[in-house]
Length: 334
Image 1 (cartoon, rainbow, N blue to C red):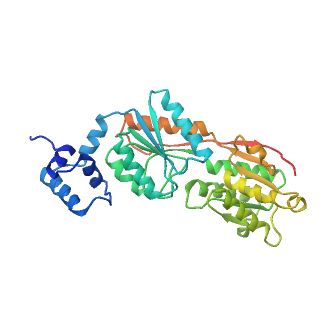
Image 2 (tube, rainbow, N blue to C red):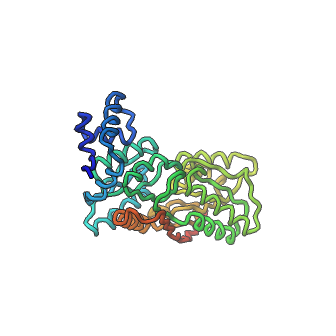
Image 3 (cartoon, rainbow, N blue to C red):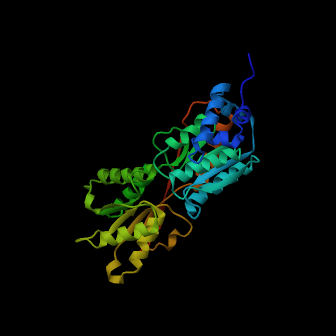
């Protein structure tokens, strides 16, 4: 049996660098067509298999794990990253943290960069609801774990919060405290965590014998300005609601900033139940109840999953871990 061709052999045959071969294999649009064809001809001549990429990934070890986050300014995402780093540091691993700027294309580009940096695995907090662009990296042997969100068209191990259960619990507690006409402010339902929180809200209403009122349900983008705009919209309607479930901390902050811009008489009696409780949440004076996610543990579980996947690349997947949330009673009164 002849010697199995390597990526270096392909590069030599095509008179290009191994990095260029890697870019061709990963469908990099920046590779000129003539170079791409030369590489593809060399692959065909040498009968090079992409499995050789997987074999090289199995044998190397940089002791580095990549983290791809939608934002670096988001305290929640960085809390997950800190949990990942703390867990991996104990195992003598380091991390490289990158921001996708909530772009799927940038997420794909960063995966290519991390492959070139020879990381042992990647933890992705998805920027969107799509994951098909991650599959070629996984097929080539790169261990990938998701954190916080699931995506369509891609199966992978994942560390998540119990978004449905947490939302259901806090809204049920809100109802027990007398709230009846509860408006919803949340993220885009295409995101798995946003969708699960909305379903938890709906389940609590149904179990509490409260009819859902679609006219007071609003969906934004999990950012402060969105929360501010949606609160303004809801309070501007005829017969506005006075109780709100806000399914994300940053939207909650935005909604609160709008309330504080109103005269005292207009905001009196408004109560909020929120999803996410952080160190500065007590400053959100309209909030009476909140859901606390186990952020550090979420990062720790993501780290455990990536290390397990690095050690057992061929084990069946996905392993989905959902961490329970905790109900926090703040009882702010306005």
